Amino acid sequence: MAAIPAPADLPAATPLDLGLYPDIQRYGASDVSACFSCGTCTASCPLSQTDSTFPRRIIRYAQLGMKDALLSSKELWACYQCGECAETCPTQADPSEFMAATRRYAIASYDRTRIARTMYTQPVLATVLAVAVAALFALFMYTAHGPQSGETLAIFEFIPEELIHNTGIVVMIVVLLAGLAGVVSMARAIGRREGVGWGSVLGGRAALARSARAAWSAIGRESLGQVQFRRDCDVDQETMPWYRQRWLLHAVTVWGFLGLLAATVLDYGLALLGIKATGTPVPVWYPIRLLGTIAGLMLIYGTTMLIIDRLRAANRSVRSSTTADWLLLALLWITGVTGFVLEVALYLPSAPIWGYWVFLFHVAVAMELVLLAPFMKLAHAVYRPIALFFVALSQTPAEEG
Ligand code: SF4
Ligand code: SF4
Image 1: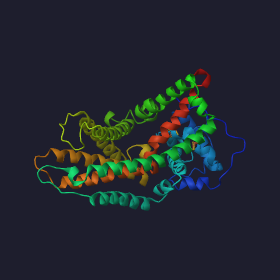
Image 2: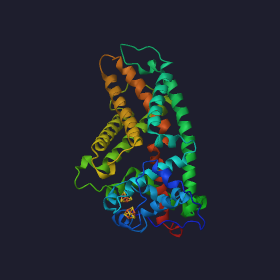
Image 3: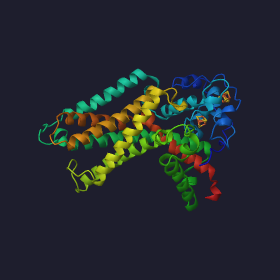
Image 4: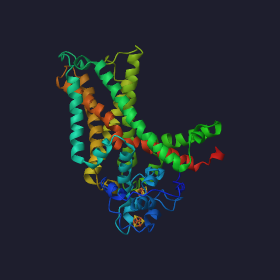
């Protein structure tokens, strides 16, 4: 995926929404009213080689109230907020921050429940909600608690594994339904704009092969491999040591989160198959446990460094931070750290009583992280690959598939 291609044509009659720009500003957008479409940002953007209107076209949509055009722009998600365009803008419009705010706006617009809108536009309420959801999960689990053994740390006697599994399944169903609604909404908008339907994605072997290549590019190369982020959009690479480079911290956080998710699902799968009951003591080199430990350490490292970078405003992409940024990092960090502390507690010779409370806290925050995923910044982990799938499709004409 070398660069983003030029956008698909818009329908002749595009409805205007004059409240669009003020609304996007509620999501933290910079003041782009002075933008006169000079194109300086386009010249400095590493993604604009084949699209002479990116990123200023997105700003233009907002200024003109072209809401449908904005929400159906796959290019919006190709931007990794490197901040290069903000450095060169003669009007200090900060297009980089504007793009980030517009993605927040897009996540909220795809979400029909309006929870995402609240999470993004009402920081105090969002923080109260986040604390309340974690507290409710903890309280709910605690109502069914069992004894706290002092001989071994019997965490699943304290909080029954069936309760955790069943609650987890309910949470996953809610998340899938809420997330699916948003994903369908986004994919339909972009697909209509790009003229991509089921037939051009799945109709026949050539279409399937083209789609598979686009999916590999979006998920394998970009989302997991971070290829474009590393190659084009991490503009501070030369001045940063490798272990602090932005793309690496992002990648380590993504891999850590996915690794922990995989370890949890695999552990549940083994229990379902009757191979290993959840909570059975296993050595540290047991594959699933090893995966969980390594993934947890990656998550802790990635999120800790990202938090430090934001506190220090260490690079131009984190010059300003929103409550949504902090909330996601805090939930990821707490999940990683409490999971690791629990691992240590399980290996201590005596069973520390505090280990039970760490376990309860860990489960509550992890559940909350999953439950709120479609309504907070974490949703970009799904929306970005979908948009990049359409970008990759547009780079491979159907007849070549
Ligand atoms: S955002 Fe700034 S650099 Fe980009 S077109 Fe507008 S005025 Fe020019
Ligand atoms: S932040 Fe970087 S990738 Fe995004 S529009 Fe600006 S220059 Fe391009």
